[in-house]
Image (spheres, one colour):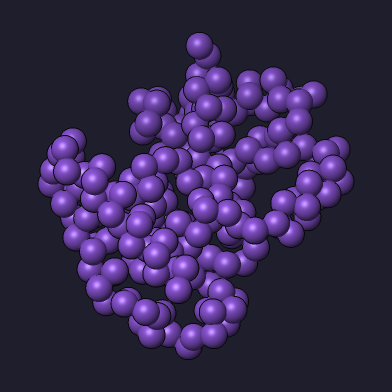
Length: 201
């Protein structure tokens, strides 16, 4: 498979801007080779429904301008619906363990959260900023709009905030030390159930 195809796959999986330097590290290529592959990918996507967008030292995939109208219609219809269980899980995780990276959100949930997280960003329920410890990733937090919707002035005033935040934090810390441990799936389910029950109150 060509380098441009690997880049396309990574950008699709990420669902958000990724630094060229990071792509070079992942693919074990030089930044010059990545930029050359961008040209190939850009040409391959010429008559497709998605386009390559580059801004500064970052790149991402986006829908083609010609498809803007239909995508907007679909988005409006989608955003008028409930955010669903996935959205609730992500919101709860972000609330009780913010700021948090997408990698940690994915790990806690056990699935890729890109699409649902992007929907929450578009809805204005969560916000992100560059990770000061790793410029290649973002940290997510609940937005002011979401706190206003909940009717709270501080996330720490949410039910059982200290308890749940410690549970999630401990789980993440353990995952870094005990990757592959048999108790992790049970821990994931326990956190999901506790958060779901709390959000249902």
